[in-house]
Length: 134
Image 1 (cartoon, rainbow, N blue to C red):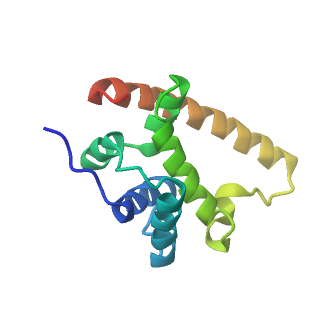
Image 2 (image 1 turned 180 degrees about the horizontal axis):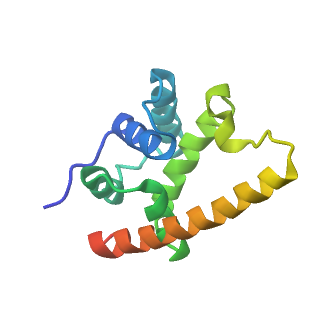
Image 3 (image 1 turned 180 degrees about the vertical axis):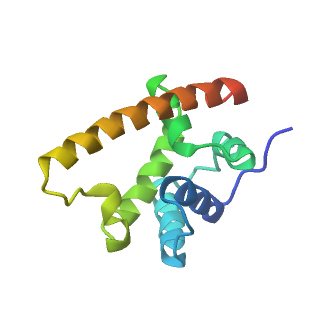
């Protein structure tokens, strides 16, 4: 039994919650759907994303693992669209820009990012294998 393909609004909600936490404002959802329809008018939805949404999987981890395998481009594309839409907004600035001028803090943040990325990759590999994602 396959999961129902989510609407673009449902995709935007799921991706936003997984990547940034919380619920996006209606404008972000509307712009995500509009951008997707404009850039990919013949796209009928992603069975991969449908399975992820129905199972509540970690978007970042799965995308990382699939990208390393040379797969999952439709998931990467969807993440990029949402990221492009929110990166210029003040509410999301801390996700994209480090304001701290302290070198020590920057080194610690970099070390934490390496550890987090390693964890995300391992988790993604597990999820991809466990749920048969491609």
